Image (cartoon, rainbow, N blue to C red; front, side):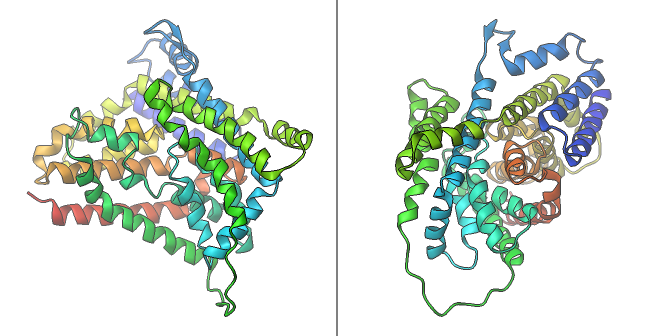
Length: 421
C-alpha cells in the first residue's frame, strides 16, 4: 500500500513543481525517488538506482549498453531544432498563408496538428506547436487554448489509426485476436466524438467572425513546407529491415533539417547559427526524466496493486474495465503502444462479468487508456508542446476534463447499445 501512497505523493509534488516552473526533468527525477522510497516494502534499496540506470543506458538483464532513451532524447531535441528552424526561416509563415487560403475561420488550428498527427513519432506535437502558436495569435487565443488545440488535434487519429503500435498489438493473437478493421469500426463513434468536441472548442475559442465576401485565391507555394515534417514518415519502413522506430525517425529528421535549408535557399552560415541556437539540453533531460519515472513506476508494482484493490471492492466489472486503463494512462503517460495491451491483460479477468462482447470491451479499453494517456501531465506531447508555448500541462485541464469525459461517455453509451451479449 505504501507504494500507492508514494505514487500519489509523487504526482502531487510533480504537479506543484510544474506550476512553479521547476525543470520538468528534475521534477520527474524527484517524483521517481519518492516512488522508489515508498516502494521499499516490495523492492530493495538497490533497485532504485538500478531502475534509473536501466531506464537510462544499461540493461541488467542482458548486461548490455542500451541507447534507446538517449536516441529518443536526441530525436526530441532534433524535432525542436526543425521546429525552430521552420519558424526562424519564415517557412512557417509561408505554410500558414497557404493553409489559410484553403481553410477559413481558424480551421487551420485543427488541420495543422491533425496533418502532423499522421506521423506516429513520439513528441510529435512539437512539429505543429510553432504553426499553431503563430496562427492562434491571429485569433487572439491565449497560450493554454493554443496548447489544448495542438495536443487534442495532434491525437485525433489515434482511435482509428491502423499502423499504430497499440492497434496492432491489442488486435494480435496474444491479446484480443479480433480483426483490426472491426476494432476501428467499434472505435469510430469515439473518433467522431473526438473530432466534434475538438471543433466545438475551436469555434468557442475563436468566437464569431464576420464572413468575407471576397474569395481569396488559393496559395500553393507555401505547401512545400509540409515536406520537412512529413519526410520522417517516409523512413518508417526502414523499421522492417532492422532499424528501430526511433532510429528511422532520427534519420528522417536529419534529412528534414537539411531539406528545409535547401527549400529556403538561405545562407548556410546563417542557417547553421539557427540550428546551433535551437539546440537545448532541457528537452533531452525531460525525456530521461519521463523514462526513469515510467521505469520506477513499473518497478514499484503499483499497477498490480491497483488491479488487486479494484477486484476486492464492490465495483461493477465494467467500471473496473474502464477505470484501470484510464488511470494507468493518466499515471504513467507511457508509450500508448504498450499501455493499451498492458491494460487489456490487467482487466481481462473481469470480462465474463460484464455482458458485453469482446469487441466492445476491447474498444472501451483502447479508448479509455488512450484518453488517460492523452491527459497525463507526463505525456511527452503535453510536455513538449507546453514547453514550446511557455505554459504548463496542468493549465489545459479546464479544457481536457470536460472534453475527455464527453468523449468517453459517448463511447460507453455506444458500446452498451451495440455490443451487449
